[in-house]
Amino acid sequence: MDPQAAVDRLWPDRGARAVPLTGGITNHNFKVEVYGDTFVLRMGGAQTALLGIDRRVEHEASLRAAEVGVGPEVSGFLEEEGWLVTRFIDGHPIPPEAMRRPETIRRVAAALRKFHDAEPIPGHFDAHTVVEEYRREAEARGVAIPGAYDAAHSRSERIRRMRGPQQSVPCHNDLLNANFLDDGAIRIVDWEYAGMGDRFFDLANLSVNHEFGAAEDEVLLDAYFDDASEERLASLAMMKFMSDFREAMWGVLQSGISELDFDFKGYATEHFARLNFESAGA
Image 1 (cartoon, one colour):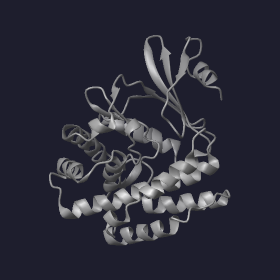
Image 2 (cartoon, helix red, strand yellow):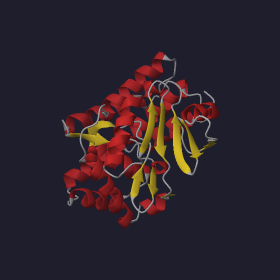
Image 3 (cartoon, one colour):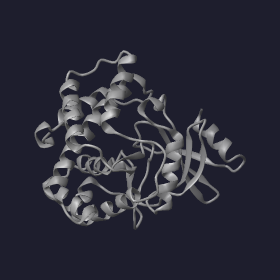
């Protein structure tokens, strides 16, 4: 549906207008102003269920994030259409270099801990399973699987065995830089991949997406756990590998299903090249 038609349906006869927001590579996002109020309308992209996205789970996770003061207020949800409406956060982005500062890492760790400690949400996320599901869906659509997959999958299975079962907590699972805002508090947006999962995936996803080094990783784990032990650092390194593997296979599948104008094959290639087998340890 045309975004303005969606806005007219959601806010009939109120003169609302939609302005595109940049940065998303899965959905269409719009800033909507209505009589002095400002909202964000997210319209789900094509075939996003194949990416493991469940709009009902996204809605519930968004409600939980708002409840604990981490996410924006949820103003509306049309499940069948895949539309989610939230209050616009009048905050500023946090550049990657600022995210690497110890004081920012501590603030982000506290925000993540709030969500991880919250009441359970629907849905489940396991990176080891997700990469396999992405491969099956990509192959079913005639997408060529990169040769790097087999070695990465073998390492994924070793990591799974070494770490064993992990406590399942509410997780975001997509902590890209664009999903953080600062309005005096750390806010996290875009909860479409959220589900119950491994807190170390969130921590690793944050780390690898912001190019944390050893010093930043220690600050992160010390802030989150009050102890950056060798065991925790090893778990973080293994899940940093899984974060990039998941991202690479996400790009592979998106190359076969997305209608957005984006180089998903190049994105997948970049993340396969970034896989760090040595630091993953397993």
